[in-house]
Length: 371
Ligand code: NAD
Image 1 (cartoon, rainbow, N blue to C red):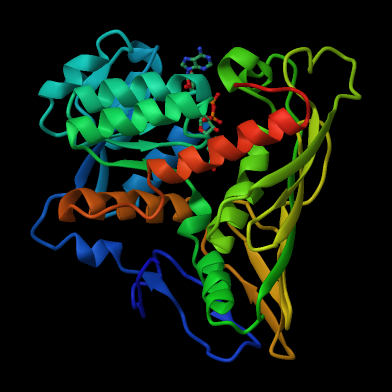
Image 2: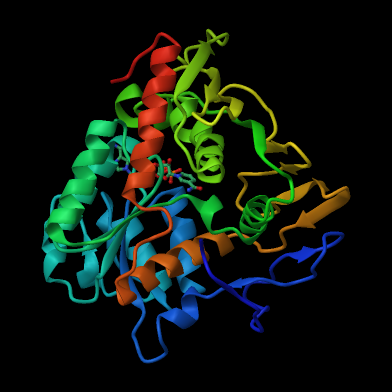
């Protein structure tokens, strides 16, 4: 469990307040102080300069302990130069994918941030490990459990750390929800219902089996899946699943449009979830206990996470006030702290692998195995 301190520097991250729940705290993660004032920030090389990497770079610009010191891109002279100028990165620290392995010699790079399409995560994690760099890799960790194992092995062999970008593990509102659950105040966990839905346009790499590895389940369904596994603290054993593609306009020739599935855990906890690349719907998780319940909605957004429900007969209502890119600042700083203090991340490679094993089981249950 992530540690918290009561914080003063609220201008940078104005965090959540409990409204009707028992204690009115503001919570601030302690990674920044853990790195120690005398240590220089952990230097990251951002690999793949798309949507998520641009958020990550913005996050690092808001951090005292994490800094982007190199860039890896297919467009070194355009995108590379643009971001290098924006974040004060020397031109000599812009790498093409082909020249990436030379990063081994760059002493300003401690770690890489992998913000590439899913099917490229494994290759760049292994190459980064071989270049003796720590790896912070976006979710899904890879497109198969076999790749996930390869990444874990490569990082272990090279004695570098591997963290997967599960934002929920670091968001203070989510951590508050988990603390309420762990306190026993909603009683024994009984069931979850969750979902994450959206639209993808024609031509998006996420609709390519080769690049995405799968459809909405890989990209969006993984959020309720991971949150449920993280909260339940056990691995799902029995699955049912069904997928459907109603849109015949050409978007879904390689991957599913929508997936619904159920999971049963060895303890008897049951869960039902949905996700889609072709429908509007809420991002939510219901957590039902024998004595109370929590609802997180929106649940998986970059900010504005809203927790409500009933705990011990009392209403709970808490709205996260941190703003994008605050979850990414927390992740970047948590991993920086792990690198500097030789500690293990809250969401290590093994966590990513467990999700991939469940994802493979869900696709198999839906009659569309990917492994
Ligand atoms: P994106 O399309 O915006 O960026 C992908 C980057 O990879 C681009 O810079 C692109 O140029 C580069 N790239 C290199 N080779 C490519 C190829 N063959 N095809 C396509 N692009 C190629 O994607 P994104 O939304 O930034 O997603 C990147 C990763 O981050 C994915 O694994 C995704 O699941 C993950 N992600 C995580 C979150 C989160 O909240 N944690 C949110 C969005 C995306």
